[in-house]
Image (tube, rainbow, N blue to C red; front, side, top):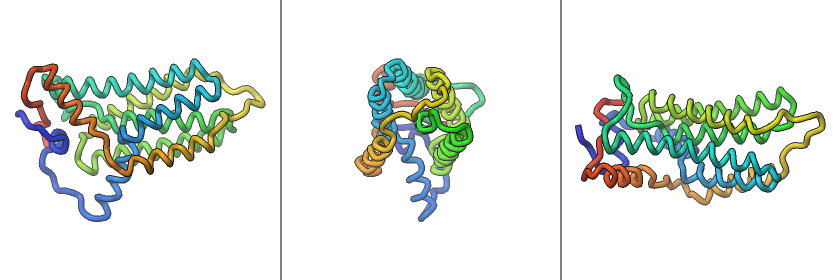
Length: 226
């Protein structure tokens, strides 16, 4: 089945819409994983690491986050252009919200808890995983992804965050936390406010790339209901 041309329907087969406060809540949660926020936030983390003179870690972070976004994009382009996807799964590409949010928030938790007591590290990481879980659930609640797409996104994000974490040596006794944590938190809030809740047009861009590369005038869409 060939569907298309709108980012709103590329990932959807008709299903009962959410209404009222529930819809507003899940859309607010899902925006925390939108690339209009996660990409500038990832750039801020890169600059934060440079500010702390963690040059290798900054490069590792850029590679981990950048390759995560690239992998997500490729899975979507390959499906939309050529309908290539895992067999027996309702799968149109890895969830970018789930992947980028998991990479971002889990890495932030690791950075903020660096050199903290072990218990505080665990609590910080648990809180970030709780946020990631909410974002993942929101993608299912607003009917834009299947479970397999969301699970793949979370798994990819966890792998990226763990690879990034391997660049840090276990903090020695007396190691200080990273400088500028309060400023980074403030800048993250300002980035969130600056986006004004407007999603990035990434899906439309990927659709155009898929059509250009495949030579098609339309893209393949989901054939199974969510």
